Amino acid sequence: MDLSAIFARGVSLVGGGALLMRRLKHGAPEPAWGGAPAIPEAKPQGHVPTLKMPTARGWNPGQTPIAAPGLKVNAFARELRHPRWILALPSGDVLVAEATEVSRSARSVFDYAMVSTMKRAAAMGDSANRITLLRDADGDGIAETQDVFLEELNQPFGMAVVGDSLYVGNTDGVVVFPYTDGARKITVPGRKLADFKPGGHWTRSLLPSADGQKLYAGVGSLSNIGDNGMEAEEGRAAIYELDLASGHSRIFAGGLRNPVGLAWEPSTGVLWTVVNERDGLGDETPPDYLTSVSDGGFYGWPYCYWGQTIDGRVPQDAKAVASALKPDYALGGHTASLGLCWVPAGTLPGFPDGMAIGQHGSWNRSKLSGYKLVFVPFENGQPSGPPRDILSGFLSPDERVSYGRPVGVALGADRRSLLMADDVGNVIWRVTGDGPA
Image (cartoon, rainbow, N blue to C red; front, side, top):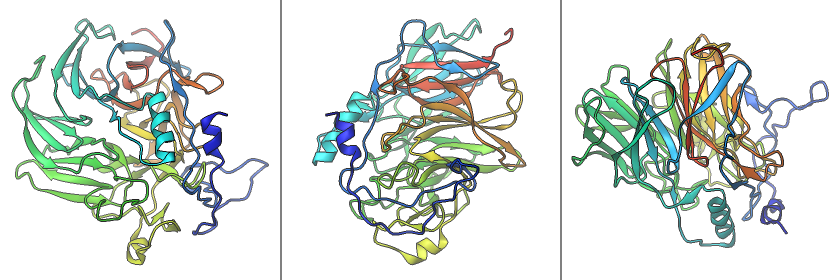
């Protein structure tokens, strides 16, 4: 029998929390996205949650993702090693962080099944631990050269250039290197700016403030719902603010299970993030989300979700629950929304201001979700409508195989394109309008 089918049976337990199942409208369920999503009542799955992932295969020769009408897509670079995150430099060069979750031994039956499934889905393995520089010297939308820019890093992810410094988010902290625009390689040692607890949700995204004085970093939780106790989670599930002059850091906002992509909304100057929510409560419960981030804000993890909906599996903290903020915009359950990039109106034809979001795709669902590059429109500093596909077609029609999985997304230096990292296809895709270049 298929392993995912065995684990999909789960264990039915009675869970806590308010009943949030909404009535049907016009014969169809209310959407699982937006500011007022339909969130079904939690159905805890016990020690054997639903487990389903496609087998990673990569793209066939000549095959590409499916671009939305009015758009086209081409491979900007191929034959990378698990590209996860992108930094487009003002020079037009592109830095790509290549890393993955490191293989580990299993400690339980479910852990064994999950590790085996993640390896089959190319979500775990040997990490390249490097940053590669891509250069498109002739401006035709295809990088002619690939150079190893930095190596011997520790699961690098986020990158930021501020002045003559390059900041890299390793899983165990932020490291700063001297940077010269146009350089093809950095060989001098870096200097540690901040320490983070490694492992667990290992990605460390970075985003500088507009004035270049601060750096914001996303640090995910160690576990699903504080499985090893909250002492092990101290300093995690948070967005940090680092003062670059002094090196001092503080938690800017907490209760964010796994905040990955970070972006500024330019009209308001407000920080936004996409967050991967907890597993084991059902296909759509709770949704991953896009939210503005308040200084000092607490967003519920692990005690509650989507505001103050209690997670009955977790020892409670009533004071923390009372302070929990509701996110702004649901993105559907377990879509694994990772990449985030502000897209100004006019970047892509037919797309207004908004956020592009790379959805890596689900594993804790009975039916797959995510596996797309989507767009959320904004008006007056807030999400203003349903999500739209930018790229799709990352799954085979029967959903047994993934050709690719979207991760980081960045605005191209030309401001007329988007770049997206695909860590199964080992490709950086470039999206533009389908008219003449």
